[in-house]
Image (cartoon, rainbow, N blue to C red; front, side, top):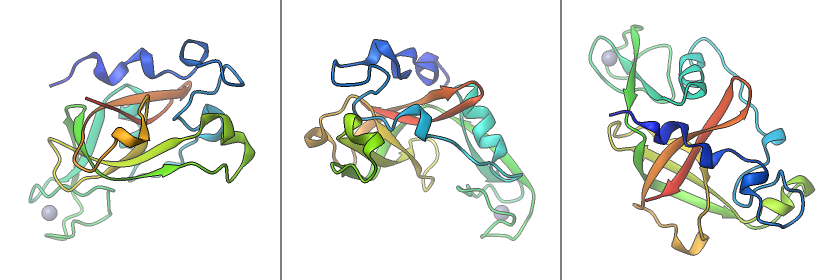
Length: 166
Ligand SMILES: [Zn+2]
């Protein structure tokens, strides 16, 4: 299933998301855009390219079907190097999380607290995607919580995963 949840403009950081605390470009709960970047290689590029289009894909062995996230050169189950990509619905559950309350660098101070979660997509058991939980009271976040997954665009052509409690 694919719908517009993966392109939720509500997760776009910016003046609309400002809460009046400090820099209007800073949104509580999200690492500021200018601090976010991704580095791709031949194994991970398809993941990031799909995310930039608002889609979540996970790598799958084309020989035996094992999901291999993060992608690896060879399948850990059958050693095949044949890799395909499976698009999954943007829904999942929190596998684990942590709450950042201390500004290790001053640039994140206005965005605290930030919840960082590992989310397992409903359609990709064993795959765990890292991202911020947006608009969440940290006290409401718990292991097993259901989330919507969205691509948070940080600049042209670059998006990162972001989650919202369902
Ligand atoms: Zn395999």
